[in-house]
Length: 512
Image (cartoon, rainbow, N blue to C red; front, side):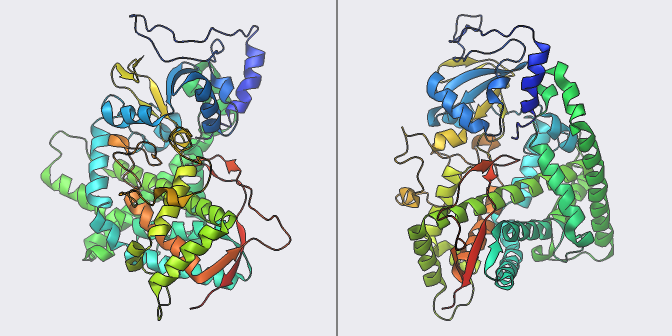
């Protein structure tokens, strides 16, 4: 998450505290004789928040873990937070003691924008179970994902056409985000493009504001007496405005779908978007009666739409940009994956289709290695313990926030050879080559795991594979002449961690 607001915290702390002193480090007692995880020195009131000032906390936490161990305790203001930085620790969080770690902490911006109805941020309970069930069974089943195949293929063809028309220099960031938004908006709202809204600009602006806010950590969550900083920075006002505008827009879309369904219901899965599917669930529940359970109403539908948009667009787009950047810096791997794709399409073919994807084994290795090096959410989403439990022998009290540093785990030299290098072949001997969320290998957890693992990977993967295969089939890519010989791979934080540089590349059309 974006912790840039904490930059102000340092200056507030200097003015607010007359004396800053360090506590002793070590492993404090939990009060019953059992040890809590080791903890670095911190400040009174603020704890370890000043140590995380900056935009890339996953790197700072990796450096701290190298000194204090794979499980450490931080005090983020008033919030006790355990950081897990090894595969063994991740396995205990996501598998061994999965139920104890299955909840989410209250996140201010998620509460403001989603009201606990979503699957991603909701605490463990009936709301979460309901949204998870609807997502897995109705939205993200293999059958449902396949029903959107024509959308992905049409958007991929349009993307290739856009690159051809652009000439030599292409802003690949803009091309890939347009493809991603096209796929998800048609899948969610409908195949007819009726919700483009001012050429798509209003919709894009609203979802852009939503994603930006969702990636913000607020001061008041951690240090209540600094909550005024959130107001001063305009976060609360922007959250109110975005929530109201987004709510009104989605209410209109849902009402339009209800009206259309009363008129002439479109038959067949290939013509039913996510809103239709969610309304099917809503109407089935109303017909059967809620039975005292949690109602699946418009608020639940809106929250699920928002999370689908945020997760699908940000994760898919970010990963594709990182993959192309890595391939530009590794021309041998670029040529190898292009040869594989072009051979799979074969003589007489003129485009990549989803039927070709199962043959593209090396492309899958490239994507998997990209996710290892550049997990879209390096710290995943935070967990919260529902009961007293343990982690690698340390006691973790109930209501403790738990962060899994997936980025540090994926670059751990103790478990990976050449851990910081782009080596797709490292996964070649893996029996689960295409498994991007293994239930067994906790060295690689870009989408989390266990009860809180991300089921959206089923929707994201074919979108990524088809887009990358299309770009690599139709074009040869290189950096503009006269510029740097390699791309700088610096990171930039947001809802996900993105490539800081804009990906301006030269696209040379290829024909068989």
